[in-house]
Amino acid sequence: MDAARALNAAQDDRPWGALSDLPGHPMMWVLILTDVVTFGLLFMTFAVTGAVHHDVFAAGRAQLDPVLGGVNTLVLITSGWLAALAVESRSAGRRGTTQLQLGGAMALGFVFIGIKLAEYIVKAKAGIGLETDTFFTLYFLLTGFHLLHVVLGIVILAAIALADSAENLKTGTAFWHMVDLVWVVMYPLIYLIG
Amino acid sequence: MTQSAAPQVTRAWGLLVLLTLLSLAASHSGLAGLAVNGLILAAAFAKGRWMLLDFLKLRGVPPGWRALFLCWLGLVTVIPWAAAALPLLRG
Image 1 (tube, rainbow over the protein chains, first blue to last red):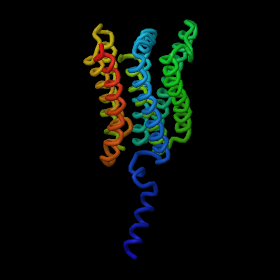
Image 2 (cartoon, rainbow over the protein chains, first blue to last red):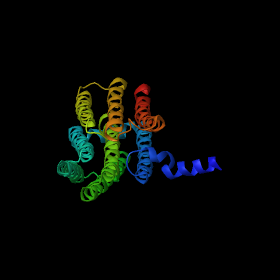
Image 3 (cartoon, chains in turn purple, red):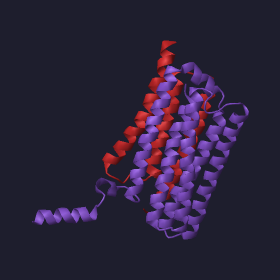
């Protein structure tokens, strides 16, 4: 009886089981885990297809601008840094600084979108699209799917700027860091190695 | 989370910037092949690790969670390296 009561008490303390150990709301971590698995499978698909169609991928990669991709990486990691600092500021009770840092993180998110769209426009003007070849089909699929996550991430950052409890900050910024993490792997995979 | 974690976050950001610039320099070095690919993907692994530990705050969670995410990171960096190595080894 005592054991059953202790078990119930433990379940009350950790209603999401192991997910309760992670910072922020566990439901966000369900989304993060789903996304990392999905992106992981997409990365495998890209890598294996690149090994099979090596020449097509080498030609496609040669048409990308790695410096632009690198600039976007710096933009996104700086945005992630500001988001992480916002959590620290909120924990220290500095709400004004928190808002500024979240604003900076969102602004850099928009810069990332602008650079990526500029890249897409350059490709479109060169006659390159989704159906050009296997490389560009996967390029647009992977970067486009990631771009949708950047847009969603900015919406989440805006939401936590409005409801800026410490718990909300941890939950919302966790998604933003996942978007950042995925790009850090995607950038070398698509632009640099081959 | 205490205020003292901010310097750690900033240190992680500095390392992420440095490794991004090194990766870009390596890709522009004119060298190609397994070693350069390995260097670039090792940098991506290191960057991802710092993001997980210092941005996503996984330093303080049970080790199983860190192991899970680091395994994912290992897979998505090692498999692309191995896949890119196949055509290079075939010549």
